[in-house]
Image 1 (tube, helix red, strand yellow):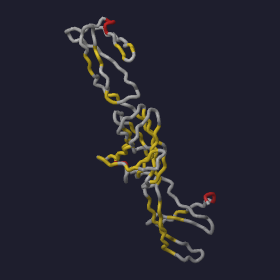
Image 2 (cartoon, helix red, strand yellow; image 1 turned 180 degrees about the vertical axis):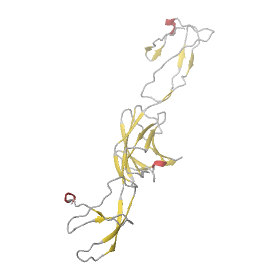
Image 3 (cartoon, helix red, strand yellow; image 1 turned 90 degrees about the horizontal axis):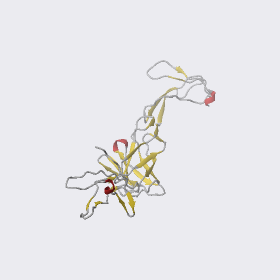
Image 4 (tube, one colour; image 1 turned 60 degrees about the vertical axis):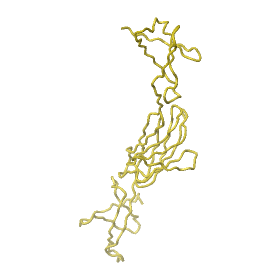
Length: 260
């Protein structure tokens, strides 16, 4: 069969599809016509307007297209440096391509968070706590988003990260009623902290020319990934050596005056 496509005309305040112009007849045998409509990009939700069919000397008939218009949003973030185990402010920017109509929220799965999540909107001093529901922290924004306007928010939480360096494993989702959810991976660089204790085990009061030996106990918030070292001023220092217990072999530490 031959398929034809016909344009409908705008006759304000309605759009008219004149089937008779193309010799389309309604008969006692069902007539199939496909109609394609393009919703206004600024509106979301169920289609609210009927499609009315008429013909000369015929009673009008109408029906509602079973269609829901879904909007689009964009979520972005910025690079953040933070320390493992530290509650961190993380900026996000949310832009909607249509006016939202409710249920605007940011969501973070609980597996990415060590404590709780709170948020604030740009220009506001109010920090609101997000609700933990079914393993997801839900931050209700309670704010209608306008088309193509970037709304800025700051999330506060302690990332559940145990490895040093850059991670993009933590995801945040934005959603709203009749909007397609959107995601962004946070761009975090995780730093660790090191604490040490020095215990003198030989010659705490050292005669001139005798070495002082002490034991260092160090602990970090994460396993290091390189650059493990220590340094000391060369002032009044003739030699510095180290060994990893229980080894008996002492290693020399070179003198780098540029570091001092």
